[in-house]
Image (cartoon, rainbow, N blue to C red):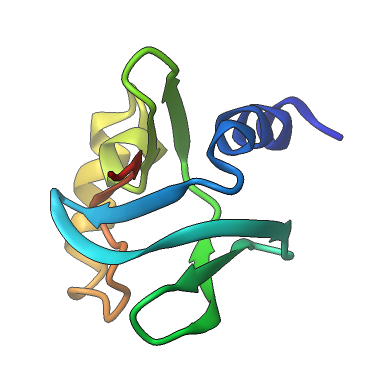
Length: 118
């Protein structure tokens, strides 16, 4: 396994069997008990048990450009911002912003937070 996926795995493991919330730019997207995850080709498949609907759903999210885990706060950040993708190449960032029309993806140029909820 490569270092990139290993970093994601290390961030996700502490959330197993806990009630979590997924936030996109600080707005709640999904909530439930985190059961399982798998790696897809270009995505993560998170299996979450929704207590209100009494069923399990799979949330498919793209692999992030950056991943940051803060164990003290029980927070995991998946960064999909273009500036994280281009890093120090500001010219490339400007070109990407000019080329792409606003995407239909809910993750485009945003940060996804996974946190333990009470």
